[in-house]
Length: 143
Image (cartoon, rainbow, N blue to C red; front, side):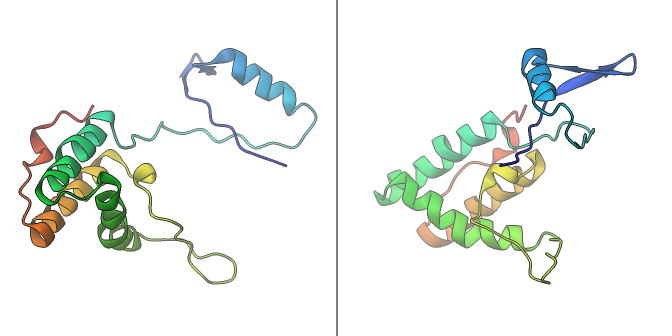
């Protein structure tokens, strides 16, 4: 079974310095003598902890308080009714068979800006569906 490992680090003096040098060295040793590929690029800025705290602690909790339903129920509904259409608007590369791949919707692949947009769309949805008003996320520090 083959798998890909990702390592964060920095380039200094023309060398890659991994944050976890022991793990990096161990991974290199495991690939000894095998064809491998190295990809180098900026570390993507995904959704942040403050965004997740706002999503669960403010938005989802406000919906729960207003309706009495379980937090996971709102999360699942947001994923199906808001996140899936949001992700489908992205440009997806076609697979060799011509089909497009869109698995189970997840916020894990969203960038910082995309997560902010998604939370705004969820706010709008919550207001339209359950008359739940939630403060704007713009005041929340995202880093």
